[in-house]
Image (cartoon, rainbow, N blue to C red; front, side, top):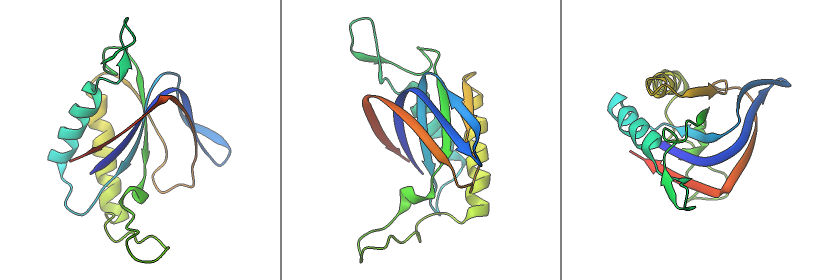
Length: 145
């Protein structure tokens, strides 16, 4: 499982010209799954994510988590995180989990996040999404299980 995490001041996801998920302050998380991912990977990474100290404290030092700042999370499924570009110029997605299984894990991931009492917004799995991210910093971190 792989997460690309971006600290955000304001972000939204649009499907068919309609906003389906939006946050004002928090984290945008692009979520990708591979064949060996399990519920244990989800639990490990959700705990890591919500406790990741990448928000500034009163001394402008990244020392606070999304929980500490009462931020929101915009979760977007992103199978291309497992793109393999070693051969040629066209990425292979053979390492990405099949859609049905990935959708189940993506739903479990979002349910696990909700246990932390944060505002969780999402995109739509397998939809053609327009994702507007105002990356604050910019701060971008990759988490893997």
